[in-house]
Image (cartoon, rainbow, N blue to C red; front, side, top):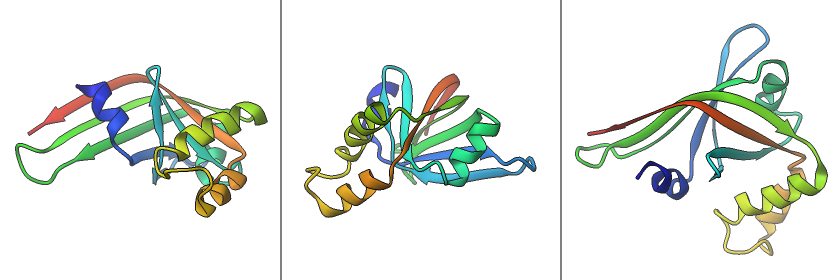
Length: 131
């Protein structure tokens, strides 16, 4: 059930730690595959800069506001930045195709052109909840 949920949802809240020790939390588009999370971004973003300095991250994906439809997954893990252009492009396209019906979409092309790295999260601990 957890893997199906992670593959079906669209928003992951990613928490990174700034160099000053403050949490930085952002909603991101993602892909879940082979037990890992993949997020396309740009090396100039705060989340990417934070991960370069401190790879420890937390994440949360949840849905529902009334029982019995409340379900969530949260966890901690270690992230790394993938910058190899061929790998970035391949993964970024897979992520974007979760949100756009085609890569011919103008917004999809713009996002792809702005993506120069992929954040890969290797979860260490995952917790689920349901109400």
